[in-house]
Image (tube, rainbow, N blue to C red; front, side, top):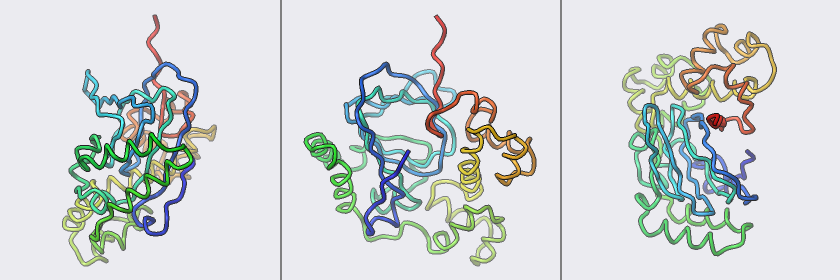
Length: 268
């Protein structure tokens, strides 16, 4: 999915915006959503509420049509939008505190209705977007985010300074030592700001880098080597931990979007 860049004032907090135009209404379908470690905001423009299942749950949770998702470290199932169009944001670590006043670990692996966080401001945002032309949707969303931006520190300075090292897979003990902390203390600071441990976040970053190759036709040994895994077994083990499926199952599903894997409808 192509992301639209944020304005300079929001670049420290936002990776980008996405906007999907409405299409011919189709049948609702279910899909696996693979984690990326980032918080998201989404508005389903046709008003269809998000229905979500986590591991072990037989019943769906109905969240709403304007949803704030915390950073996810594991796969979940959802009922995909049926063609009514959608709008959303991908946030950087620290944005939940700066834009929503929420500690990331409180929303880890969770979705909530934005009304639960912003109150009536969420309903007003929904109304303004629904009343506007599609080409103004991102502009209106960004204006509301700018208005809600808090003058606070989203990440501890040592976590912010070393986030790139964690993403690159540098050993956590070495990062903590250079930051002047024990590994346990650095892990606590990182979890408070990002919503998960640095080890988990680093694994998700490596998982993200290997997804394009996993969706292609490269030999698995090459995918593992190029992705920084020690061998093919290591790739399979980590891939299953994050995606809930093996790399082979992922490739056979042939997802049109890297993180959205369709769930086959049961045979009649």
